[in-house]
Length: 71
Image (cartoon, rainbow, N blue to C red; front, side, top):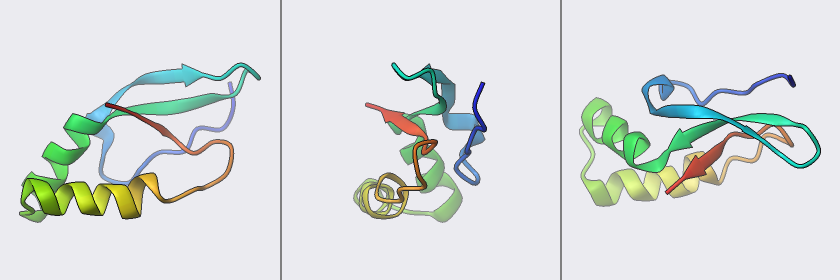
């Protein structure tokens, strides 16, 4: 298994490990759970959490081992 990268503070949103065609494994997160965590931990509205998620989490490319997010 490859070196896994995790999103800080989002451990409760992990739903599994995804394996890509090339055999690379990446952490898989639930978008719904990520948004719930952001709203609870940072007192964000759903709209604020969605904007933060899209810009700072999904928009953060960390190489081939970047986690994936499932809607």
